[in-house]
Image 1: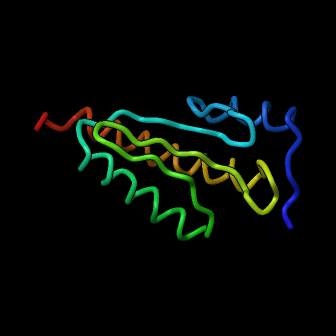
Image 2 (image 1 turned 30 degrees about the vertical axis):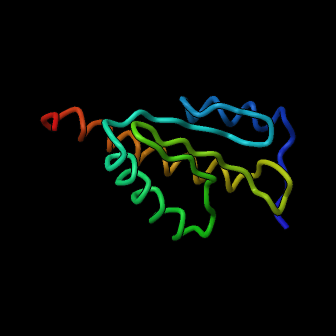
Length: 106
């Protein structure tokens, strides 16, 4: 089993992956999208990485937003796996935001 992080450890790590936030036993990230299809497209990009590392976020998806929550359920809280995946997801989101800023509005 993977070691669960202490709250102090999680607080030190979460500042490295802004705008992720610590919420109890989760780290969370939300992003606004133009519509449902755009949110789904972004989720598909995240899903590819999550599948590769075999660690999956809890997801809320709706018109104009995507919300991700990471925790290691088997450990009963946050582990380094959550923060490593969050770093990878954040790279995806930043690239998506940059590409979207350069694209014409639908």
